[in-house]
Image 1 (tube, rainbow, N blue to C red):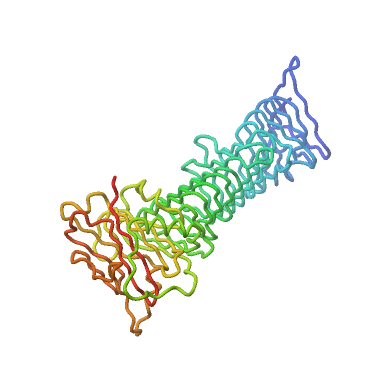
Image 2 (cartoon, helix red, strand yellow):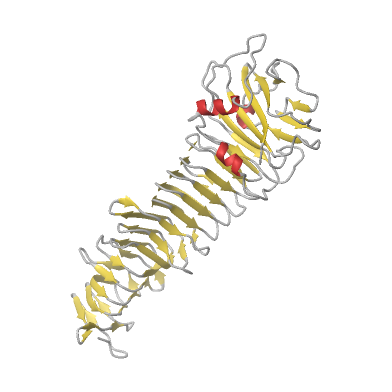
Length: 476
């Protein structure tokens, strides 16, 4: 079925088209720009091509064994109530009015787009109920809402999903969460991205801002610019901002390991509702992480105390009378040049932070030094800090430097108060001559470390509270 050149098909009511050849579906092509389908268009055929120039285009029951191409230059594209659109091939949708993008809304739960869906319009809404949803080239000047109740949401190879407004993605399969994978490097989510699924993978050629992302699996994020997090993850979270800052718009609740790579950027996660159960590995020039880091306090205390038992002092040490504050970790260093070591990953059993990179002077940690900061369960110990040094630190007279994170710094009295942090060995003896402590900066500097010096335990007394620092050397 075709329309003649320069002809106009003008129908006030419903249009029903069916084309076959010896029982096999044949093409339907009504593509003249002056056509006007006033009501729903039903079509059964192979490749189905429809153009409407006036008042928008309503799709009814469409069954195409090939592709569907639907274009409206006079208004929105919609699916009629209770209509079923079933397309075996690719679907291409374009809606505008006087050259201005208008909405594309194909949101019936029974729709089935077996091939790739391309769409150009204002707000774009797509629902697929069978077999998942594959997005091709999407250009939405408004919002994108993509829902699959029959499988994963993915982007086709070499496709670009470009959305000016908010993107909302939801994938399930028979009621169970399904994967969402929009990982093409050219994607551009200019607005907030909300997602609900199993494994969630998102890539953005520019900055990326997450709204509410709920994942029962792992989440992987890649941007080239600022990365704004707000995520609940049952598995692990891996985020790479390509050198941009990593911040958050909502709480970060992650059961698995959190791996954040900001490169030359900063990581600033200051929502007190954060919960990083397994810990975090950070690569950044500086970072601050706030939240509940006390979930596995007993295990953390055992980890630190196991390096060297605390020896009772001759005089009583002050005890903590209130619960530890939520942990806040920060540090400064040169840009990271290598992925965090496996040792720092496996050592974390609650929220933690580490900084690795080239050697630095002044503020910051020497290359390869990691600090795993935990609230302690002991009544007279407030914070445990497990400091891990690179293998070989205690041989060849090597040295190191590190500063304690912001949680410890917050315990230091304000200017004008008399009390100052004091550092000693657990016995009350002074620190060895090769280890210096800067009380103002809570910084340790070591030079010419003797063989066999580790593990070493140091007790810091700060404003009537105790911090145990266990310094050890990695074996690999």
